[in-house]
Image 1: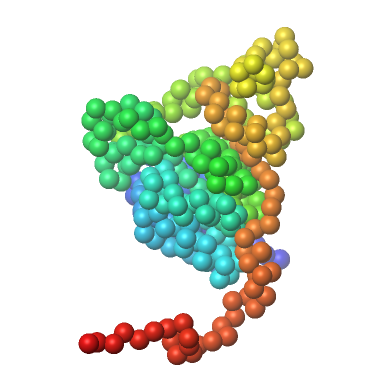
Image 2: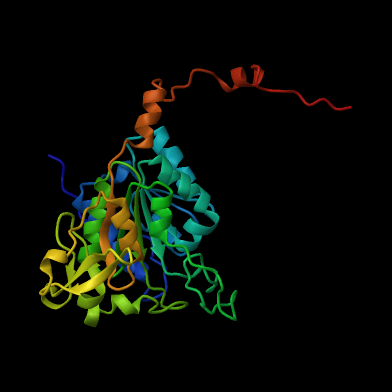
Length: 330
């Protein structure tokens, strides 16, 4: 009988070096606990990261890990998954690394539905390079690279994921221990590319940017925790609900005690509903917003290539073959 591992078994001896109070600490604890909860094995688990504060993650998890180059983590992780589909491959990225220089790689990973567990730490700022505005920074954000305020329209990670053809999108808050843990377990269980946006507080360069909905004193009224097949209720004693307004084609908050029949029931498979939930400002939708099972890319790949990438030719054969050429000096 295999011994059940604990979160401590996935913690390394490396000194964790993030700024004191950084939300990454809470995420790290949630991930190591989730790995233990789902029965992951260190020898068959890999964390791949790019560049940024979040990308130090592979050093702090007692598994295999690759700290790659800026924005290329999805590409490296795709190669790993194709080379060995039995590996449990996680990608850790940030809003800058994943949605700026890495946006192209992330897009194709999602549209192909490669079996990766992608975690995007969104703090709406470039933290490692001292606070420049990022692709998710709000219009008007003042930073060293936008001293007069950013004029860019921010990228919505959720809309990006669905627009790319992603099959799983979820949201969580770094310090929401229960909510984040539940989302991580569901993301791990999804057979395909699961994409999770984690609202992460950068206490140095963008502190409390999410305070409007993460402040625990008012969380009941600013957070909508979604459960598939259950009514969209929130607020004190679940007194508020979400309904669809046919005039504005948008979601709106109603008094659930007065119009209980109008409260929407969450359907994870409804892409139109998912887009509306992503755009909902307050309350902010959390949990699994969209899930649509589909064949993972690696399964389709091996069905098309039954040799399972077995080497059939040597490098020498390739060089001597018809697809090479010789450059002659004049």
